[in-house]
Length: 175
Ligand SMILES: [Zn+2]
Image (cartoon, rainbow, N blue to C red; front, side, top):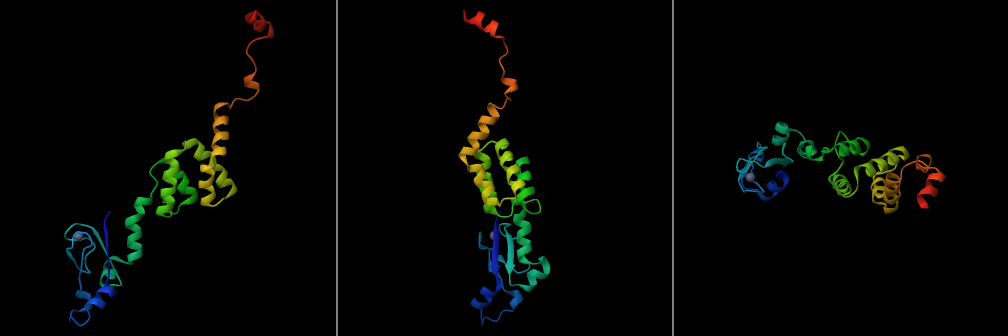
């Protein structure tokens, strides 16, 4: 998603003495160089999103630039897999990852490690209320993964692992 940001204060500074009224000042789109006015939230040239900082005109029409930006970028931070949604419910905010960095960190481990293992670490992390760093660190902990893998594979109780034949049967087979 293209977002072209413009700062009226900076333009005012450059245009000082040219005789334009403040609200009439324009800028060029950062992507296609089309002229964008302070009444634009979409570039007439390339349809990039346009955000004006320090512009009372733009703010009156579209609200606070920071909140507008959050709405635009917010959807990108939404969870896309059931596992991401679960992790977000523990560590995100408003159904989204808190930051791009948090999202990127999780996408990396999600790609690399089994979902069931991540869920296992998440359960621990939520129980212990550990911070995000420790949660990610726990997933990357190779010895945890090893132990978990052993438990998953050899996860039968001792009772279930009793031999299914009697000693007589065994000696018959061995003779
Ligand atoms: Zn443009």
